[in-house]
Image (cartoon, rainbow, N blue to C red; front, side):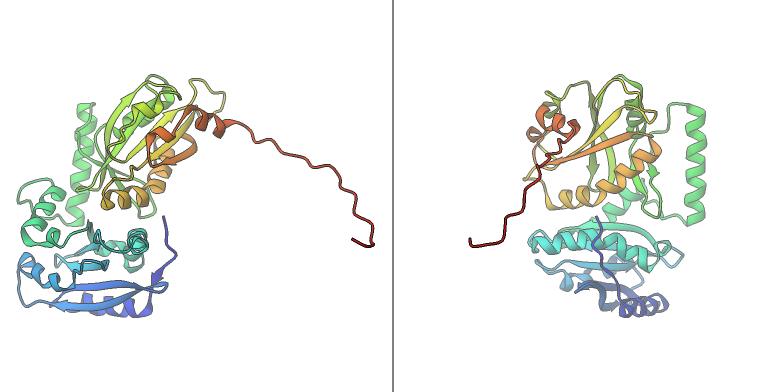
Amino acid sequence: MQSGISASTDLHAAFSSFLSTPSAFALLVTITGESLTPLETISSSNSSFHSSLPLLTPYLQPTRPLYLLLRRHTSDASLICVTYVPDAAPVRQKMLFASTRLTLTRELGPEKFRNSMFVTDPTELEPESFERWERSEEGAEGEQPLTREEEAEKRIKAGEEEVRQGAGTGERRLIGGGGMKMAVGAGVMEKLEALSRGGENLVMLRIDVTAESIELAGTATTNPASLASSITDDEPRYSFFRYSESSDAPEGPPIIFVYTCPSGSKIKERMLYASSKLTFVNAVKDEAKLNVVKRLEASSPSEITADAIEEEFTPKQEQKQGFSRPKRPGKR
């Protein structure tokens, strides 16, 4: 989901100044009209990143979304982009900030950002909470962030190990392109690729909100009439359903993508699912070679009925209207 908003000239200038000022700890960014604009630069004399985090607290208001660009390291890819969207913010602002966060890093230069973070509460940016998040991102207690060369070497070694073991390492992998990579958990792509080959015809996925990665939630064999009962209504889901078992199409059997998001879902879940779905579906079509022919969205799985699915595949009848003779001029 793209918002059509772009970075202003003022933001580019403030960002350049931020990068060239070693004491600058954070650059705050907001949305003004149709542009991303700088709000304020926060400096810190403290050499400890985590000890500087309390400087952000006065700016984290309960109803105002905000972007915070944090200088985490002194090497390349030194920044973390934090999207702060409080639960009490106006709905339009929530959607706007969630749909623009990729634009922000893309226009400022994705190579300058090591990671991104989505938070809804100021406590998530407290030192202890932030350290916990970093540990989950780095994958080990106390592990130091890697340079780009080290990250590349780690991915190569992981790939070599996966080839040796055959069954895979169970680590996350990245899919997608164009600077919009997405993390997926173990087994996700394998199950999706298998949809075209028969067997189970439903693959259900969930987003791990903390890690912002897509994980396998389950698989099943079902039919259009029972599809709704196979998908949980407790939390959002991405589901891929093979509509028919056979197809003459060279691209494979038709697959339906179903996105369900219950009304009681947390705002952070809604934002992540809504802003990631198109990127993920396109990546799946490209990398898992799935013939995704329809996309259905509903707040409850119960709305995905057999009739609703059948209607998607029923050719629309064109209603032809007969020729209507024009009325003769004269009195009405």
